[in-house]
Image (cartoon, rainbow, N blue to C red; front, side, top):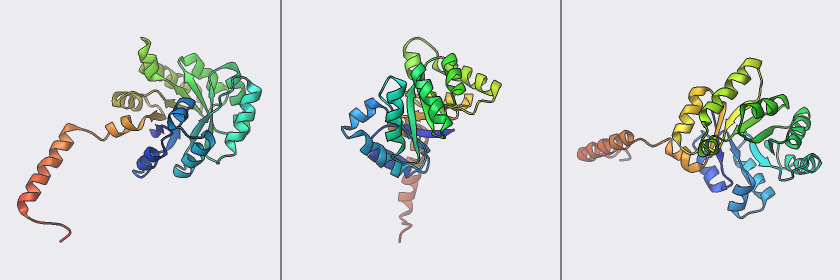
Length: 218
């Protein structure tokens, strides 16, 4: 499963990229607002840090303006993935861009039927929001399983990008189901490294090493 990070904080992105585990980045208008920086400037910097797909979202609601915004965004770098909402105009834009060889991430997916439409429109990625789904009394992981089944039934190439990931269990269950990608905030990705037995093991090794009085560096 590919790991994307969901942030516009370039310092956090650079830190995670150094681990070699980061395959891409997703951003949205809220994350750009939180960064306090200019949109195009941030996306350009991120594209220079991560060679994989970097999702940059249009903010228009009509197809014509979405296309004009996409023309600006796709010129930033070759790894920009245009992010569009799951609306009729969004899917029109998805179809037009994908036919032109542009990567497209269709976002704000909350049903398997919506995911089916996005795949038929040629989306590179579909972003079902599992955390928000759970928040509203639905089963986010059941949604991922339904989309996986449908895509496998028909051989769609669209990759399932699990979004709105709130905790490591979302990551685990997504991998078990067979999602292609997950995107999570830096804090959630860093939690994946943590386990109390790992910490206890390190503490034990360090205590025993100290008793030897040795140093590897001499």
